[in-house]
Image (tube, rainbow, N blue to C red; front, side, top):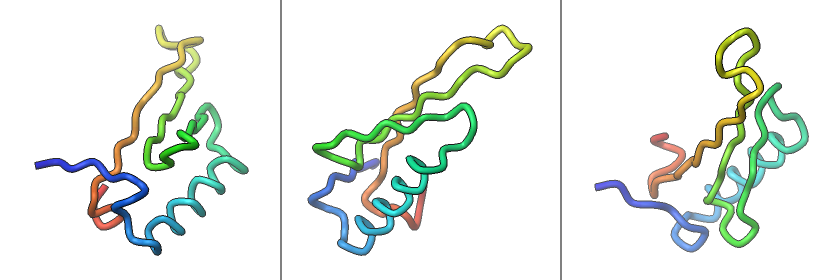
Length: 76
C-alpha cells in the first residue's frame, strides 16, 4: 500500500537532502518548469510544466502533484 510521507515521518537526513534539492530547483529551475512547495509541509510539492511549443499543448500550463513515499529517496 502506498503511504504518503510528511515532515514528521521522514528521517532527518532525508529532510536535509530534500531541502537541498528543493533549494537547487528554486535557484536553477529547468526551463519551463516551476516548483511550488507547501510551506507547512515541504513534502507536498507541485510542479507547473509549460506545454511544449509547436504542439496543441503550447501555452498550456500543467500542474503535477509530486507525492513522496515513506521510503523516499530509495524509491521514487
